[in-house]
Length: 285
Image (cartoon, rainbow, N blue to C red):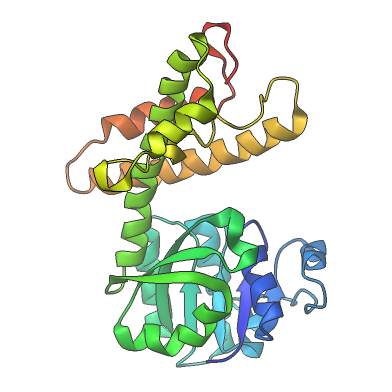
């Protein structure tokens, strides 16, 4: 498995494609926006459809927005699986529900294609081989895909069998956004008493062996003020929309086991403030 084709050239997929282009492994790209390929200097033009991309690639990497888009690019006469390449591998980088994942797994299995579910973190570093991959699949499947992972990933953590990569990403998102909310609420107190947030971040970092390592909770609070700043407002809105999407997935999964996630529900219902787009007590966050 030497070459990869990337479907979806957004924040994650675009970075993955750049990495594979540098390593000489990028065979094809596809995005509904033809101009998206311009961010990959020297890279291939956008394929006509996912089927043509799959024909040109040993491995297909999918980095679309949600489950609906994932199923769409896999299925149909112009989908990945219409390339009719039994033994091909698909690495799914999108965060989708476990229900949608099961649908994608069946589609791939029926076509003789291996699906590795791979939640990713450290998205801002995706173009710098910085993605951390939470992969689900057999040891043999991950070993076969290692050349592709080596081409774009910073590290690959094998979470277990098929499905565990996606479950781990959903669990990771639940924990991460809980920390972001905690950082927001802590910053409300700190700012109103004149605390320097960068100094507070240092205090939160602390000693990892003594329960430190919490500095990431202030990631949004330390960003520039969004009020009157169109670019920053756009960044925060993008963050908020992804956060709500991922939290909805977590709520859906917990409900399958008869469980509620009150913290997650609260964060979803207060997404504007968590994202720094709503200003409490006259103190912009």
